[in-house]
Image (cartoon, rainbow, N blue to C red; front, side):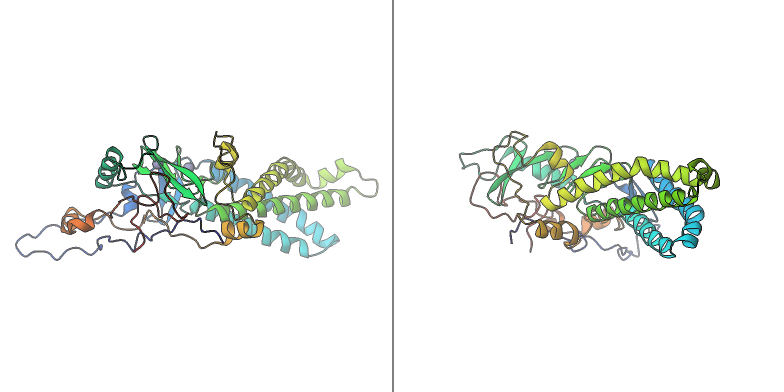
Length: 373
Ligand SMILES: [Zn+2]
Ligand SMILES: [Zn+2]
């Protein structure tokens, strides 16, 4: 199996000062300051709820609309269609509808409220260190120099460019992109989805995929049931107009389902193709691995060249930890000063298979994190 995933380091495992206040000195009795959590000073354009447990994009106004459409359409179906269908067909219909509905809502909320894989911005010290490295590259002896503000890593014998993010002050790891709406670099960035009110990335793609697939089934199921309901009512020469008069809610459901089912089915199909190819929407649009972007070396270096392995790695791989540690405490000035100098900078020495085309493995830790201890 190819080794083309990054190793992530749990931010909690890094040397972060403990939230416990330092023992107060008897002569310097200060008022105990309220410790701030990191989400309160988070630099990106996100909103946090429940003391940082829930994270959504700032412009998440379409999420209530998505949720409302699902709730109203499903509600009308359960109230106006299910009783008739149970009476005339089978009592399995509300059970199947209920299971699909629960699945859709849970996966939608998981997509919306999960950190999509935001990368923390560099601290001023880290940024200064990276700037220094950009000015004086480590292997200046090498004849090859990549263009300024880019680095190169070799992944599965393919050179992948890493761009410098001027906002986050980091070299973006492969497949990472900066979402302009959320103002964060997101790992394995797929796209920003206004319907779910969040970026879709490394940590919530599987929920997003589950959401659109279950929603396809749910919409198609309701559409089929409502059509059957109206067909049964219009039997015996009653006509469709009579059936619609008998059950006017069905008309509304029919319209909503008819217009949404095609786009949702299309989207599910497209993402199934992406999952099978281990691609992201961002890469597919930009043509990152197909030569569209002027990259002569084609072929997706992250693909296992096996549909089953690609699906497993995208949908069932281990869930990487959230790197922003949004519920952690912001270290106080005293605590920052107490950290020994060598611990202050989580060494961002980036001598990791990059800058220059040396013989490298495809296994590089992110450039902003220290190599795995
Ligand atoms: Zn960025
Ligand atoms: Zn976003």
